[in-house]
Length: 231
Image (cartoon, rainbow, N blue to C red; front, top):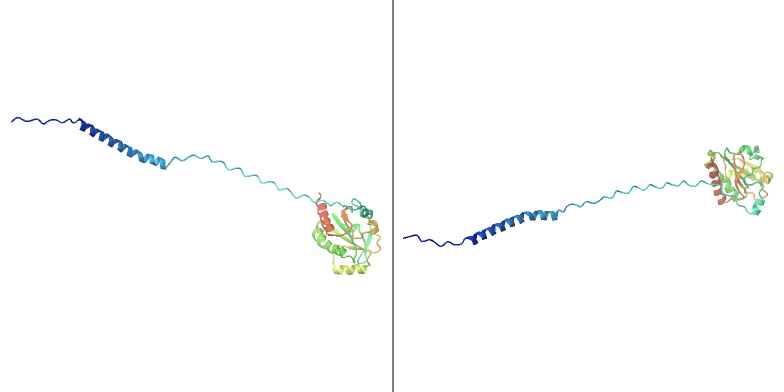
């Protein structure tokens, strides 16, 4: 019996299918390998470069202005008060010799301070006057004596016994002279006994007032500070 030959099928479609399958698998594999890298790039983007501005230079602190230098207050008097003054700013305090509370004669000029002298007139019956007697201790002697400032109190018109009694109640640490007759005061003024004068080392009047008040007290201390501040 002779061999029968089986019919041969056309294999080309099968081959093409296999090739297509292989190509597809290769593409899928390639796609699967590249996807994680792309996702990584998306999840971890490249850091952006940010320009850093330099910190501004620290502002230079403003220089503190020194406090204004004190000035001697201006003496402003009415025409009537001015007429009572026999000496004014720029004049020298009159020369005089007066007795102290112990009866000893004292030259006013020899008691002047090395730099400044406060001369004030007072009477025992005036509470304002006795206030100044005490204030000169607390304001001037206490704070300025070591700086060359002297205080001289001249009692005008009271007997020695009355002055000594007043000073027992208000002890002082500066010379007190007596002008019982008022002769020395008449060289300075015609009236208004409660007067206060600030003199320089030569006895020239730098400032004065014809009363004693809070303003007088303030202006006197300002005048002293200004006079001591001068070179």
